[in-house]
Length: 263
View 1 (spheres, one colour):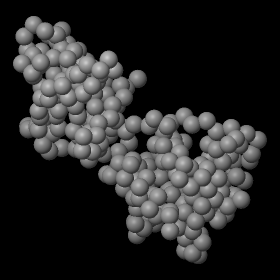
View 2: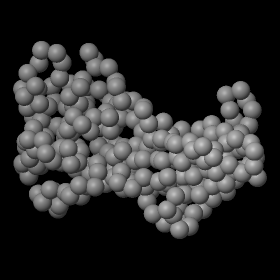
View 3: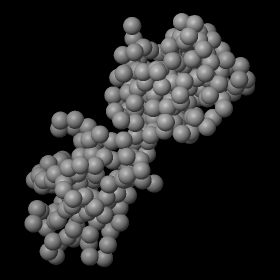
């Protein structure tokens, strides 16, 4: 059976790729998406099934990363797809996952730059390009490019470091949900010459329906990338200890999502 979509990737990029695969399966149907975790079943020959998956897909999306470029198997997949593309049998669309250099053979091919535009915009572009279960168990449905960790010092100061795992974050605007009043807290972004910040009263509702305040901060310049995390500082003013409830990331106007705590 031929598939409409083939996802070529390295195993180390699965947390990100699976988030894309699940969304595409919901839109086009799982049988139209060749994703090895559900397309290759126990007992199947891996090479045989990969060859079948590459026989006649309309679209091959190649997730280009430092991991996939080191993989001989992935190299065979995308070079096969590139050859098929020259025959008009399929379309090869590279998706740059991290800051790696695009292979020379693909530099003339228009690619989707997930590293710059993020997960949601990438999925939207894939769907736009494309339109026109056995034993599989999802493992990475809750993929987040961002995670945070924190250190609390003896003087009550919090240092909260937010890290991007795969892609650059084009909107590094974060809310720190606290129970403190404005005069009980100071805030800054470490090693940043200038920031945009504000304190908001009763900004977010808690599980018990009570309201919490929030400090919102973003750097004036500088991006959040896998190699350049941001460290936010919350300092205690007065005797009341700092009470940090959550770290949120702004996805859109009045749209906030929790940043997972790094395990």
